[in-house]
Image (cartoon, rainbow, N blue to C red; front, side, top):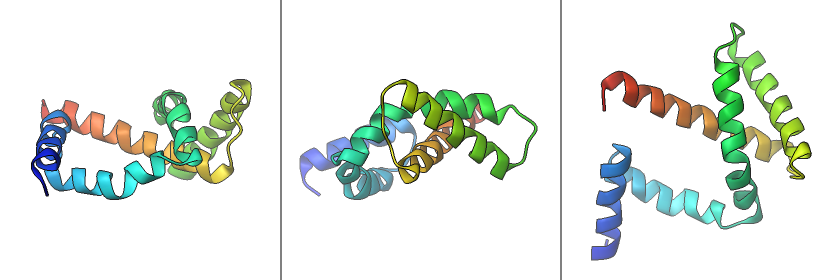
Length: 112
C-alpha cells in the first residue's frame, strides 16, 4: 500500500470506527461496483432504502416479511422517483441499508 492508500485507510478507520482492512475491502469490491450503472442506482436508492428499513425495522414482523415489505416499498418509491431498477438492485439497496442501520445501532450502543 502506498502512502496515499495508507492515509485513506487510516482516515476510513477513524471516521467509521472500522479497521483499515475494511477500507481494503471497500476499495477492492465496493468502489468498482459503485462506478457501474448499478452502483449509480444504489447511490440514488441508498437514502430512500435507509428510511424504509428504519421504518420497517420497528414493525413486529419476522425478518423475511420485513425484507419483502421493504423491497416492495422501495420499488414503489423508486418508481415514484423515476428510478428504474431490477429486483436484484433493490434487494442490494435494502441489504446495504440494513447493514448501515446495524452499524449505526452498534456504534450508538457502544457509546462511540
